Image (cartoon, rainbow, N blue to C red; front, side, top):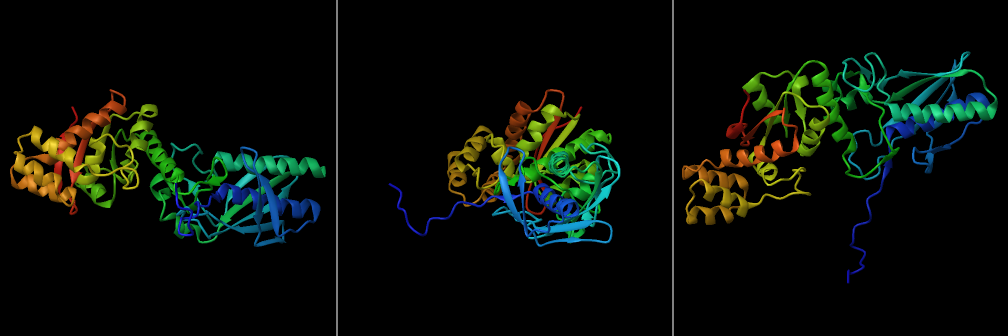
Length: 365
């Protein structure tokens, strides 16, 4: 029986997306204009029907409309926008309809390949629908026959966006207003995975059919050195190699180069789609088996099984003339090919901490 003690960690707390924040602040500002109601909180309905109450930092009239703001609460998720002030400014229009604008700290789409067209404010489709649904209902309730001009802003958003994939995706000037459910699930990394998918989409749409998916800065530098690929063709996948491989089933490219540290590539070789230590571990006995398959004697196999790290195992194999890096890449290549469509040519690179190539398998015709 589990010991019920105070030391047990509390459940992780969910938060609300920037799309939910934009919906709440747009509704509050519009309600002030149409009903004269200035509130310190507002209730919205999320896409799956759940009602949530959101606290407002301010709700006030402006020279030509109204504005309301809230502090983004991402719960226990390490979200770059957590704690940021998001506010919407609303003006009334004579004609029906809703017009969206990117205010301070919200980006604008500058490259094709995203779900939004070039020149559009980076307010994604679900947040747009959430805002539209709430404002349309408010108009019906108040008998208002005109439309709304909605400008969404994020204080400090331009600087925060530099910590995201937006510049690489061609979303310039600030953050994206995101969300599909309205809720941020702690450590779900949904936004990061979505940015990986968007990166592949943008690369292909702009004619780059050779992409390199990399686990970090060192592997990106290696791919730049090997292929001189532009930034748009470099996909920062982090630990989410599965997000790359699975998306290529829907959006195949001609050539895929996978590059990462030896330890992470060994996890891919073992069939793991998430390379983070929370979800997969380096299998030293498996490394020993692979070393044995290419000539390692029993003493070396035992040393590999007892190694402190994968890097130590690799160093011992290299000292004995055993090309363990290449063998691991061959197994990683085999697994990757089992996931992506047959027409996608794949290769795998493993690197050391200095960015030196310690293993390679596959290649392009």
